[in-house]
Amino acid sequence: MVSRKVVVENKSGFRVRPASVLARAAETCESKIEILYKYNIINAKSLLNILSVSIAEGDEIELRCIGPTEEKDMEKMLDVLRHLG
Image 1 (cartoon, rainbow, N blue to C red):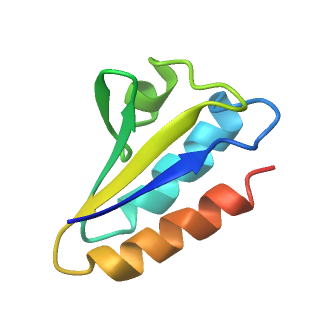
Image 2: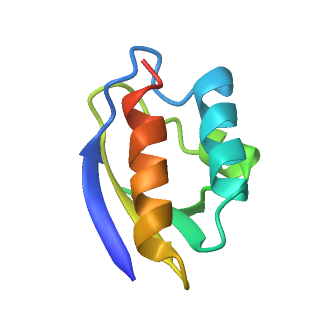
Image 3: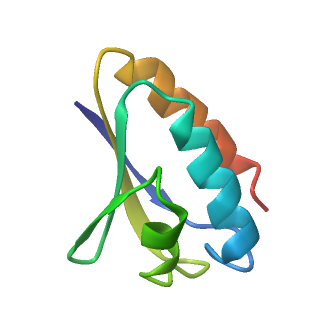
């Protein structure tokens, strides 16, 4: 398992479009991708789960990858997060 804390820099937070981009990227990963936010563990492969917690700009999340390609998947997800803005 690998995890990284990230501050959301996208101006609209994780609204429909950015959450959709994130979920689609997570779906292409072999690893289990989770977002930890406050007291929630969110399946990053589910658009509805991401939208249900209303993550906004400036919020800190923890991104967690668990699986055979976790390092590669973490880099991919971090790259997606960097380019959401």
